[in-house]
Image (cartoon, rainbow over all chains, first blue to last red; front, side):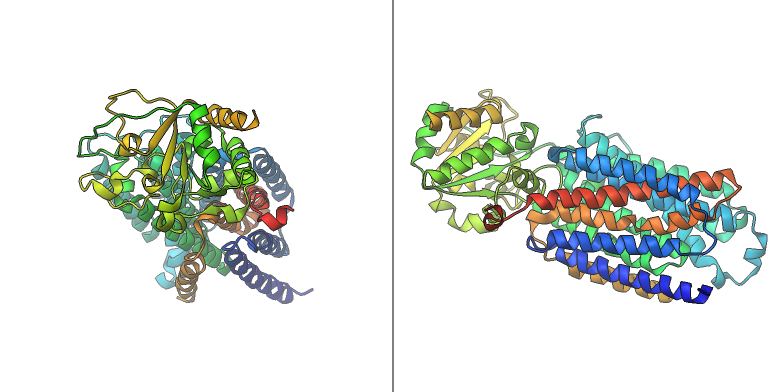
Amino acid sequence: MDPKTIKTIIEISYILAAVFFIFGLKMLGSQKTARKGNLISSVGMLLAIVATLLNQGLKFEWIAIGFGAGALIGALAAFLVKMTSMPEMVALFNGFGGIASLLVAWWEYLEKYQGNTQLTSAPLGEWIVPVVAIGFAVFIGGVTFTGSLVAYAKLAERIPTQPYLFPGQVPLNLLLLLVSLGLIGLFSYNPAEGNLYFYALLALSFLFGILGTIPIGGADMPVAIALLNSYSGLAACAAGFVLTNTVLIVSGSLVGASGIILTNIMCKAMNRKLINVLIAGDLGGAKLTKKIEGEAKPISPQDAYYIIEAARSVIFVPGYGMAVAQAQHVVKELGKILEDNGAEVKYVVHPVAGRMPGHMNVLLAEADVPYEQLVVPEDVNPIMESIDVAIVVGANDVVNPAARTDKGSALYGMPIIDVDKAKTVIVLKRSLRPGFAGVDNPLFFNENTRMLLGDAKSSIQALINEFKD
Amino acid sequence: MLLLFVFVLSIFLGFELISKVPSQLHTPLMSGSNAISGITIVGALLAAGASQNDTIGIVLGTLAVCAATINVVGGYLVTDRMLGMFSTKDEKK
C-alpha cells in the first residue's frame, strides 16, 4: 500500500477509536450496559494501538519489550487485587498513565527540539503549540505520577493517612505552581536551549505532586482520586497537542472532564469546597460545637437478634469500617437470612463512603448483593420513619445527625443518611469508651440507638449464629 | 486552532456523558475512564518504535510503552472484573 492510503487508514481508525470511547463511556453509566461499554471502549483502544503500529519505519523490538512487560504487570495487578484495595489500585494505574504522558513529551523534546536552532528561526506560530504542550504534559504528567504514588501510599497505609500540614504550606505550593508556569514560559521561548528549564520543570512537577497530595487526609481521598483521574486525562490530552494527534486530545479531554465532574460530585457529597480539600487538609472529624450529653446503650448480639428478627424492613449502612473489617460477605449473609425471614432489605450507600467514589458498592457487589438492593440516600431518607432497623456497619460521618442540627460543626449541611429517624438503629463499633472526647456523633446517644460493640465481622457473625441456633 | 476547537468540544462532551451516572457505578466508571487515559500509548509506541541508536530515546520510549500498557491493560481488566460482580437478581438466577 502506498503511504497515503496507510495514513488515511490510520486516521479513520483513530476517529473510530474516539467514537468507541464515547459510546463506551456512555454505556458505563448504566448497570445493564456497563460491562459491554467497557468492552467497546477496550476495542477502541486496540484499534488505536493497531493503527499506530501501521506507521511505516517503526522498529518493533523495544515496543514488544515494553508492551509485554506492561501487559504482564497490568494483568497480574488486575487479577490479584482485592476489592477492598481498589482505591489504591486505581491510584497506581492513574500514576502510570501520568508518567507515560510525561515520558512521551520528554522523548519528543529530546528528539525534535533540543539543540534544534533552525526551529526557532521559523515563525513562532509554526512550532509554539507543541512546545508549550511539552511543558504542560511534563508538568501535569509529573504531578499525576508523584501525586498518585503518595495517594497510593496513603491508601495502602504505607505512610500515615493523616493530612501532613506545616506552616507556610499554602504559600509554598502556590509559589511552586507559579514558578512551574514560569518555567513552561521560559522553556517555550527558546526550546532549542531549554535544557535547564526543562529539567527544572520536571523536578518541580514531581515535588509539586508530592506536596500537593500530602495535605489530603484519608477521608478526603475520594476527591483526591477523582482529581488525579482528571489529571491523567489532561496529561494525555497535552501529549496529544505535543504530537498533534486528535485521538489523544479527544480521549484525554473526555477523561479530564469526567474526572472533574466526579470531583465536583464528591465535594458536594462531603460538603467541602474543592479548594479546601486541596490546600487545607482534613478537618479532623466533625468538631461539634454543641456538647453531646447522654449515655450510649450497649447491646448484646442476642438482644440485637430479637430486634432484627422481628423487623419487617432493614437497611444496612456500610462505611469504610466494613472494608477494614472485610465484613462485606457476612453482611450479605445476614441480609439474605433477614430476607428469608420475611424482611425487606436494602443497602444504603453514601456517595463518599469508603476511600473512593462508589467503593462500598463494589464490595457489596463482590459479596453478591443484587444491584437493585444497592440504593442511594435519596431513595431511603424520605421513608426512613417506616424503617424498622438501620444497621450501621463502620460508617460514622455519613450518619451523623449533627450535619442537620449543629450549625457550627464542620459537617453542617452535608447530605447524610438519616438513620436516626429509623425506629431502631444498631451501630456496630469497635469500642466505645464512655465520656471519651473523640466521640462526636450524637447518634450514639440517641434514645433509639443501640451499640453493638466489637469487630464488625465477628459481631455480624454472632448475629448470624443467633439465627442459626 | 483546530486542535483547540476539538479540545473544547470534547471537554463539553465529557461533561454531558458523565453527569448522569448513578453513584453505585462511580468506581468502575473511574477505573474505566482511567483506562482510556492510557491512550497516550499511541505516543509511546511512536516514540519507542522510532528510537534506534540513541540509548536515552530507547529507554524513555520503552518505559513509556510499559507504563501506558500497565494503565491500559490493568485498567480495562480490573474494570471488567468489577462490572462482572454487579448483577441484578434476575441475572443471578
